[in-house]
Length: 488
Image (tube, one colour):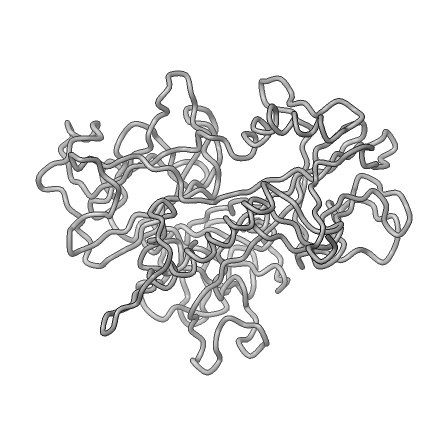
């Protein structure tokens, strides 16, 4: 969640059942957000316990190989309805197709879930694919939801009576249908059950093979991070357990630092995985009204210097297509700022050039630029504009804040970093430190990413013939169906 929050205090391991507001006390944004998170955790866990890993009523999210009565070419359809994945509700309001760029067998074109089509790998002739439902949650602020549109429009997050500033943001469940033929790099392909597909074969496959398929998208070794506010000597900088007496957070304001993986990759291999960081939890986001070459005109300017853009800042350009696909945007340096016209000039022409309001292009500021002096032991800049992930040493951010990417415990294991995964570091002036889990001796403990949490469920198997005609494999489907209680 990339909102302007004080911190994210929800922890399912604490087993809190509710938040109790006391009279005369200040209520923080973290209290209200944790209250909702507790209830959402309860509902999703209850649904998962009742339904199981996945399931849905009727024909919701069933895979079809015909559209308007005609066979589909290099494509398949997903039926409307509801489906639950680990308790997460997925809703499809109309027939959706896998690949909007594939040849359409008939008109009119089917309805899509999103206004902006997401680029997906095309189906190839002669291949057999497992169709998987990928579900996750993304943060949506007024910049992403409203874009450059007026706050006068129905459904806008901004309240026009307030004169334009955003208030509360939203979390949105996103689902995408993905395919895989089981191919893995430098390894044995993952197998599907032998035909004909039966319920017994699928049960055995779920127990024996499905965990390996999950590792394709969500590896167990996705990185662990430690954080501290420290100013150690050069000799102490290589030890994760040595903290100098003068160590402290030197910032003048409380901050919620966000460390986020930008480029996916395996540690120690090229291209190296990279990360970016923000002292505002990545919440400095501006809707874009026009892109003309290197010049980007913002829909709104900034109201204070804390969220301003300056020459030398690193910014990321995103749109709905990238966000819905979970892909990072290209990073650019700001070379010029025109406050009067709310226009910034970038170091290169961005890959996103569309002015289509439906694509909701936005510009996100990251803080590893040149506005403030960076620590002497900061990470090495990479060719993609991010910072290289260097495991096993303290990397400085600013104002004494440092992070440590923990190497794998087992010798020979390699960390697979995934773009979008993040950690949150609340820095507090009152204690001169970052709030981070520690052991009995006060040393920071490595933590896995807080997200993004993806949920996966297989829906079926499709085959692509030499002429491109797609057929759904005969026999039982892995998609699980249950009846409504009133029909029992």
